[in-house]
Image (cartoon, rainbow, N blue to C red; front, side, top):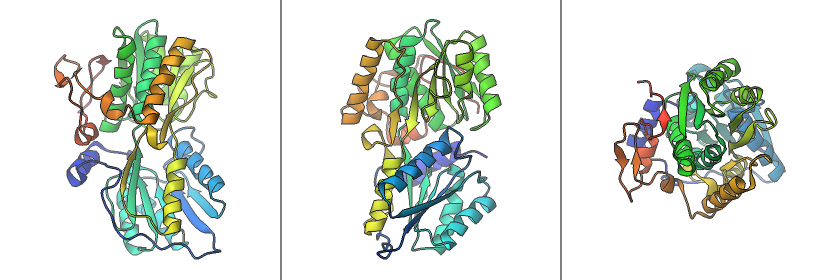
Length: 371
């Protein structure tokens, strides 16, 4: 079971034409009567303390509580993605009178839709999916933007010119991130390459660490990751080299290694959605936000990163935050694939559909995409 699947994302392209900030408009849900606490629930696929994916969502939950004192939250962690378990947990929250329910893993998509049919006055938000209904919206973010900047930092810091990348599953979301990271690396260091090792797991500290160690044995002196634990970063620290974390700031787990981390910041999105529902103005939509929307970010850059590297990264971050630069400029041609074939001609940018279905590596990536 995985949080997201290649076939599901490709289906999303066909069914929705891509995830855009607002594609569907329907009647807003009724607000909770004045004086009663507004109840919001979260469903997590792993531990809220995993220091990865679920941890980032739980930090968003806590930000929601702090920003809106009248909001009461609850969460259920370690919920399997099989339909029976997921639907049971989601349905229980709905029966308990929760006004908004956030389901934060791809495998919860159909269970969310199924439960929502029986609770038309409850608002459901599914993270990373594509199916909507009158009372179901979706949310996700362009994590590729901070990955690109973290790649620039990694490209400037490597001495061996071999950067390792511990990757979960060969699906478009992960491939897109590897490509964005590699484009950043090679923008500042055309001689560097990014070597990918697949683990086929989102959360397995031992397996992730072992994959990182294999890359280190091959000569990598920076380790990046699309995984939910700090295992790869800890392996880098133990070898005296650098790393780039993911999901949340992983520097506390490997302070001598972590250059920065590409992170999720779910708080602004959760607060915005709940405020809309409370006001009775929410409408079903498909949100795909970027740096400018505050849903993705880069963790603080380590103090040991040279000033010139830091300054260049901060300048790039400012462009993303202002909207001057977006994901489309990351994937603007000319871009060649591993064979040297031009996949994106000069002056052209990849579309949402192409990005969401990306199944090829850019030039500079070492490794294969399993079929």
